[in-house]
Image (tube, rainbow, N blue to C red; front, side, top):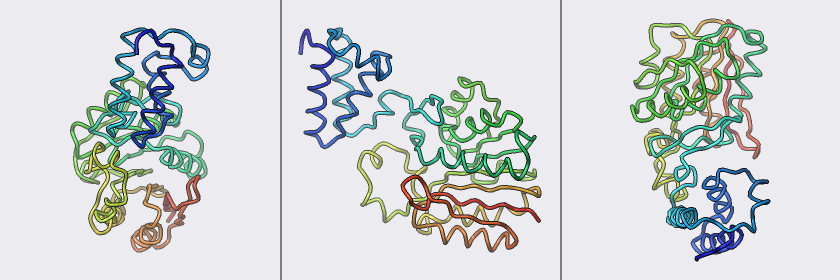
Length: 286
């Protein structure tokens, strides 16, 4: 593959990826990353010759993806809510559905507390820091704390917070332990929620590369919601907001956990863009 144009390199990569059962669009994303250009920039340079060093790197990246490594781990970045986050195998790749947790939380916070009011937010199980950093960026008056049981994940989240100029208090520990003995206004979490027996239905790209501690949970994926519902009453101010991402079959079970802990609360199951149950919000007023 010497003296190839960008177009020819992409054509080879697309065919190669399709032959390996991968999405051919990955080739374009990998090329844009190598050349550090956006989509329109790539279109304008399609018939330019690709530098040999870039071609070698591109071939290596394409082969890695063909073997199953996610594009985001190859490039080391993923966009979330308009910001670039560093990602690696110690953290889950932020999903577009999680952006809807941010949208729903901000909408409800505006009603409950008033726009950009001073509030204390905790993001439990922060991973890459996507939720915590985004909330600080979108609600500058918030005092944001982010927790995780993984030190490697926290190091990645800290890098993202530094890069995106978000002042966040990072704490290591399980579930609510790092935020106990304080009162909070908003609790957000995208915890592990996949049942172990669902692994057989999952893509090997996810199973072989993303951290299992951030994917799977006991009690059919529900244990962390149950524990959150049990532990949060002692930690919340009034009014308060809880927002969690869920697996699409878990809405009723998670709703019931919160109902038993907060009988007076307004609890909503919210569908994502694909019309699947994806979020549960719990508003506590009394």
